[in-house]
Length: 348
Ligand code: KG4
Ligand code: ZN
Image (cartoon, rainbow, N blue to C red; front, side):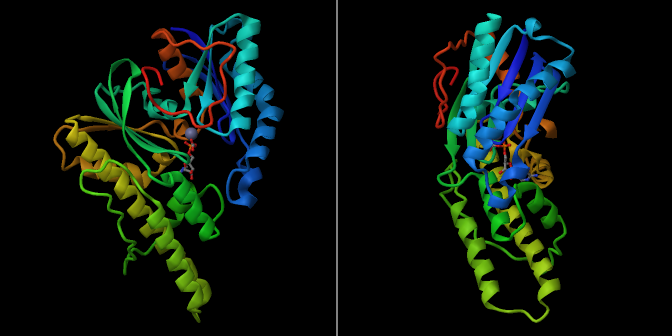
């Protein structure tokens, strides 16, 4: 195993880790989320400047916590896309500078794939290949058929918004703040669920493995607009209750489509293992829904990352970088930031 320094700066988390295989010696994350809150979403320029300002402190902290020194590092793994170009460049520049000065190899890692394999950072039983992987994050919603040696094939993805992005937009409509996922989950849990509100289900066809969330988002928007036009005398109390019910109905609808499509992919490809990754994988209701769907399936297993590895972190980048490096992946000082990096090819 190789002592690997992981670097992640694709969006609003500045993160550096020290890992060796699945062992995470340190995984420091400094988030600029508080700076984006008042805008209801990530402001790329603010994110980039934050990375530049804090990345060296995060690096120092990661080394200190791991008990290792820079001279001990044997490999640098850095996210090179997809993501915000200015944000990616900060991590890539640090990765290249360290690789050059320490004379250690550099490997660029696809952020979506790092999420896909983040459930492997676990001492428990490992998902066996082949498995269906689903990445549910702020930027992506994608289903993969995963085979040996970290090879995978894209089976379907969102045709419009990513699921996490939809949580963020609905939270913005309801003035609940940013990021939307955690606050919607909490608010939905308080819903009466009694005279249940329902938003229409998106239907892309029985066999489709693609997703679409823009219809659901628009349905929520029109529902909120309708409420605003009908003033309610008991405004304060009922508004809280209505907000909770909207969160509940929205969350049920969005999460059901993730679970249904994942099991459909497993059935189509006759695969018994499912692996979930990305920020939305932190959602307890999603975990519950997968667990209850399992009752109707024969011998299917579902693997989730530990919650600390669901949202953006460098440990998942270091882990995958090391695995790909062992299988021949190499980058050089021409490694560039790829804001729209796609999945494809052997090591993507
Ligand atoms: O994976 P991630 O950190 O960043 C991207 O690669 O995009 O995911 C961030 C997304 C945000 O949209 C956030 O609202 C969502 O994950 N998220 C959640 C939860 N925690 C974070 N969505 C639903 N429920 C959660 N508990
Ligand atoms: Zn991410």
